[in-house]
Length: 138
Length: 291
Image (cartoon, rainbow over the protein chains, first blue to last red):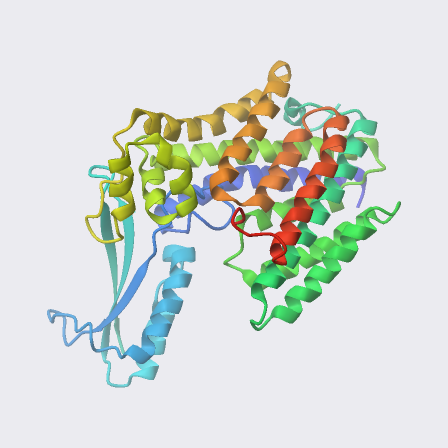
């Protein structure tokens, strides 16, 4: 690689690094990418609040979710997904988790997976949850 | 003349100065990465993967020693980059953010040749831009997320982090502090605000400093003051955050804004600090100040 080309490549790398945090902010805001990860310089900008994932069985479109239907033996799957979801946000929908739960529990025909994020309300400065539900049918 | 032209805003070294600064930064960075690799291998001790961590630490140590031999700087940097890349892949996506920074620094140190005047001068300017950009984006992110205007972020952090609580306690009435420390993580918990002017001022100074310092670093007449303020700012941050590996890198980059003697004179102190971190990692010193 010639000197001028090396400088061009290095310039490209430098510019990419200097601009990436702007893209990171957009991804974090719009797709819930983890502000504390992926080199966006947003650590210590937002409280690092844990994310919760729960799964329930559904008996029909209007039925109440049965939050006790998914056995404790599958809680590790939920925790594993929660960790990954906390990092990648909505770039990682729980499709794989749903497939794993259906495979592990043949009795489940319809699933509701709830991803709960926490934030500090700008109006009240209190913690409030924000839920996003995903429905899956076998 | 340096290209692109905006690169010159952080100041341009003459080639000899740039070579001195690059040599110091390279030796410090490789030593820092080696110490961090040992810290990680000791911390993992007993968990599957310890063999890899020890092997990486060993290679990083060899590289940190090799860099002092004339002509072996590039090879040493390449070895260290391989160590960091393997560790990065093994930890992804749970990498510490400063590991990305290390990879960028190492990539630039490998890509550009110290023996070419144009490239080494470009290199030191680029390294300084990384500091400017990092500080600026840290401040901008805080501004955009808005959790510092009323102190919500720091108030929340007091509830979760003993080190931050210790540093921030003097800024508020005792009753407010106790209230915050008693808050749990549940719906409606809060308010995460503090009725204290000192606390509000401190919270807003956090992002203001990160926006003002980069601007000062770009002004030749203010550069010395800016470097002093930047170093003081990092000391203040690390008093609570204790992310010393990241702080060490940033402090070194800040010193690169000055004459080569600043870095050369600071290097022994930097290495002494790394020695303390290494001793702490192996339990020879208490870990209380380390994140």
